[in-house]
Image 1 (spheres, one colour):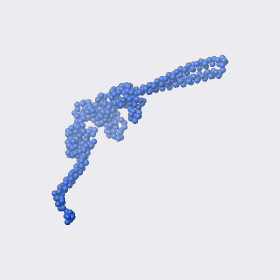
Image 2 (spheres, one colour):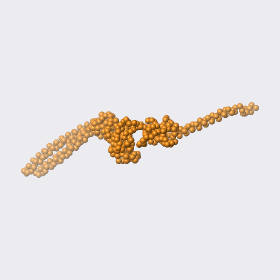
Image 3 (spheres, one colour):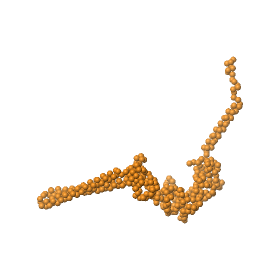
Image 4 (spheres, helix red, strand yellow):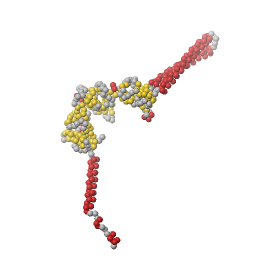
Amino acid sequence: MDRLKELRIDRSERPTKKSRGGLVAGLIAFVILLIAAVAWWRWQDQTPKVKVASVELERAGGSRDNAVLDASGYVTARLRATISSKVTGKIMGVFVEEGMEIKKGQLLARLDDATAQRQVALAEAQLSAAKSSLAETNVRLAEARLDLGRQQKLVASEVTSQVILDTAQANVDAWLARLENEREQVAVAERTLDLRRQDLDDTEIRAPFSGVAVSKDAQPGEMISPVSAGGGFTRTGICTLVDMASLEIEVDVNESYINRVEPNQRIEATLDSYPDWRIPGYVITTIPTADRQKATVAVRIAFDQLDPRILPDMSVKVSFLDDEAEVSTDESAAPRLTVPTTAIRTIDDKNIVFVLQGDQLERRAVRLGAESAGRTVIEAGVKAGEKVIVEGPETLAGGDRVEVEP
């Protein structure tokens, strides 16, 4: 009987309705959290991606109203060179620093000249020996000519034979040939000496033109060569020299608008470093070739007057003016705000832009001004430095959260 009682099911251990209800509630809460997590993840994954640009402050007025074309480019130097050596050698001294004004022919660096000095000394000794040999040959020739004269008199007196006279004549001819050969040897020795002296001069690196050193590329103790060698451990230049008097502007103009550019056409340039300074100039020439990759044509532009503030490789914006334009250098003209034209949208017959505030969009109504070179003047609605959307979905709306692409 005791064994049978052990097999009996104890009904008191069955789960209660209350414990079953807690389990169900826990499962429901877990499912809700899972659905919320999936929804949040999908919302994050569908966040619109946009590109932004800054609202820029530009100088307005004057000749810009007469611009027929705007373009961007850089200040370049027509005369710019990395100064190297003609020979490979060890640098013993460098006498140039960045920003130093250099005169044509000024010593920039000196290489180890010990070998060149010895080669000059050897060439001088060879020249001296050749000249000594030439002097000896002259003496021998004079002696042979005296003997020839005596033999001629003896033959005329029939004292000696014609054979002896012929021998004396041959001796003179031999010394004449040797004299000519040794003269050539002296000339060769002189040319060799000139070459060795030139090698010695080449150990001194001098400026080929006047300018300003914009970089110092080598130090004493390093090796230098006119060609790259040594696995990158050999220098190929002492410094970079720029002739500041040769500065000009080079811009790329879309080939669709190149017909608006003419030689000697007036321009107005603005350096990015000095946005309030308007610099007059003129077109030098249009380079007669197009870049098929960018569909642009390069244009060279000269400054009316150079200024120490203008430096090589500075970014510059150029406005090409029509024939009636008068270039003004007034720096007090009122500024204006511009944005890329792609930032402007038209919704319900209103011009608006989307301004990025944190990661949310703010819709702004704007009043537009003139458009030029892909940028539009904004007369009201935005502030300088604010970020506006230039690329993004057409469905964007105020308050949307977005992700900015780099």
